[in-house]
Image 1: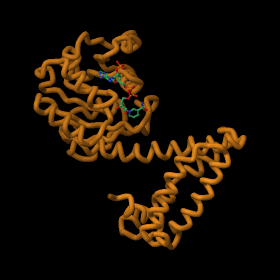
Image 2: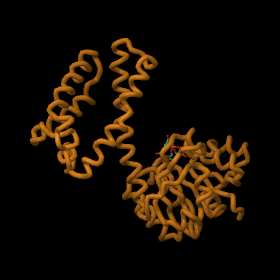
Image 3: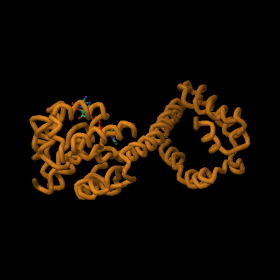
Image 4: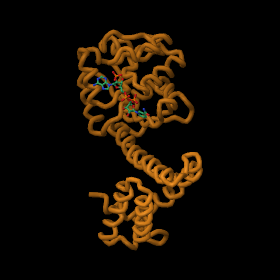
Length: 287
Ligand code: NDP
């Protein structure tokens, strides 16, 4: 087998970007996708189309999976005899829950394969570009053995051996990302309802979404269990969110998102944290 060769299974936007990066890097790339036509462009660029999942698995030591979720992984891999997995390293860059990542690692180990779990932190255009990074977890030796191939895609942020760890960091990040980006979309809907275009609002949005100062201020206090209301108080947060809610409603925009935030703030006050910092909500949110 060539040392610069890899199999990519799953050719959604992410898998396509990965296969492109390998082709750009001079790798022999074998591809397989449930909908075969998605491989056409890559085959025209020099990729090999595996006729079956078994052929895709046995073509290379390193198999990169980029699928919608782990249910799709089983749907694909169960098409091949177990023996086709023996000796493979599966870089599973499919995002799913930590529990499913651990189960998949055990399922693959039973078949003689090693899973490296990955959580990619950039969208497809970021693959192969400087500064891109992926959370990885799994055996150090497997990651080291395939370091150069993995680094074709992104930098490696190896978090530890537990196969669920990369998935856990990824999902915690997505918890922030989806709520954060939805807050932008919601705010822009309010802006537009008031005649403020996305271009006009952009510099303000960028400034407001830069939470670095707050994260660096709060993190050591959270770590120390210090929720003192010396800088911000939850009672002030309730008053502020009431103003936001009224502004949103007056703009004719769906208010379910700020109403949910206000509900959490009010529960914090009801639990006795009105004079404490916003971070005291961690005590309320933790069930
Ligand atoms: P898609 O959901 O578009 O990828 C779908 C891939 O999974 C396709 O190849 C699809 O095949 C295949 N698939 C889905 N269900 C099945 C099934 N039952 N059997 C066989 N194949 C199946 O996702 P992306 O390409 O966007 O992303 C891939 C992974 O990367 C996801 O886990 C995603 O969360 C993660 N990710 C994505 C990012 C992004 O911005 N796109 C950013 C970071 C991570 P078919 O073509 O036949 O439908």
